[in-house]
Amino acid sequence: MSNYIPYGRQDISQADIDAVVKVLESDWITQGPAIEKFEQVVANYCGAKYAVAVSSATAALHIACLATGLGQGDTLWTSPNTFVASSNCGLYCGAKVDFVDINIHTYNLSVDELEGKLAWAEKQGCLPKVLIPVHFAGQSCEMERVASLSDRYGFKVIEDASHAIGGSYQGTRVGNCKFSDITVLSFHPVKMITTGEGGMLLTNEEELYQKFIRLRSHGITRNPDLMQGESHGSWYYQQLELGFNYRITDIQAALGVSQMERLDQFVSRRRFLAQRYNELLQDLLLTIPWQHPDTESSWHLYVIRLELDKITKTNRQVFEELRQAEIGVNLHYIPVHTQPYYQQLGFQCGEFPHVEKYYQEAISLPLYYGLTQENQDRVVASLTQRLI
Image (cartoon, helix red, strand yellow):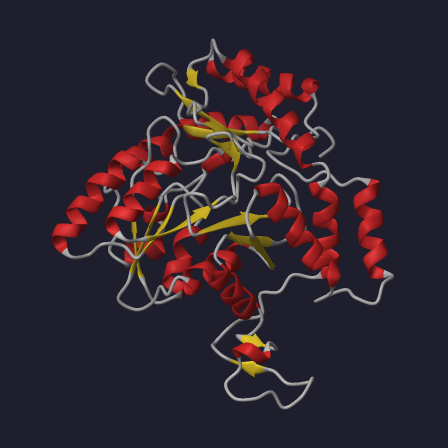
């Protein structure tokens, strides 16, 4: 595997290792001070008032939905071009799920489609309680328009920014919650920074923040001001609601703090490599990623679309040949509504044509901080060879 180029990977420095070892040698390896420090660093970076670190972005999405009151009889809408966690979180709460087709240029949820669907849903009496726009590949959705529709139709907005820490929208950093109630981040190893596994919730609302804290740890509080009746003593706690063990460890948080010191460096390198791909691929029979002028992507993914009507091979043939050449391409994403589980819920192929066409043409090329220009050239040469 020495010649294999993965589609993404983490970058771990000696400083990261030293930070983790320091925690391992301390008195706290979980539920300690490193977690609060990590939360504060990320909140300050993104420009949000509050941050709560959890075990994964999936856990963060679940907590976010619960904190908005999503439950039986409610509906969550999201993009079909995402990992299944973005919609599963609604099902975890007993709610129904529906999708809004994608923008054919950004591959994010289409706000034009959203506007039309909301007008229809209002007439039918089935407006969503929660919308989860997904910032696909690191590029923010058109959040000002989303927020305007939220004000008009009364739904809550949870930004799934799992791809997008380090990105910006209208000149401010993704995660500041200016146009949303909650933002969710991911720290999986292929993302901008990593804690191994991990996620975070950001908000500017103290009530939501307190709810996140409780739901992260079994629904328990040790705050006497929130208890029913008087505290029995300094050992005392109360379970106020049904929560979960979605805690992150100090070991992971220490890694996160260390990684955050290089986040801008990571994003800058990804932007350089993305621009280089743009230049190297411009004459091939494919579509390179388009960027909305209001956004600066963090470039979690670099996705091309093959012009299948102009080449003799299928998307699958090109994909498999690249894999055989040890180029670790991937495909993001299989439209959620086409998954067998969702088909059993009543969704059908053909319901969201833009994302289905996108899926037939898309390939994610390798993009990560440690990708060398030499290896990037090899990716491009291998792809070029297969499109002739």
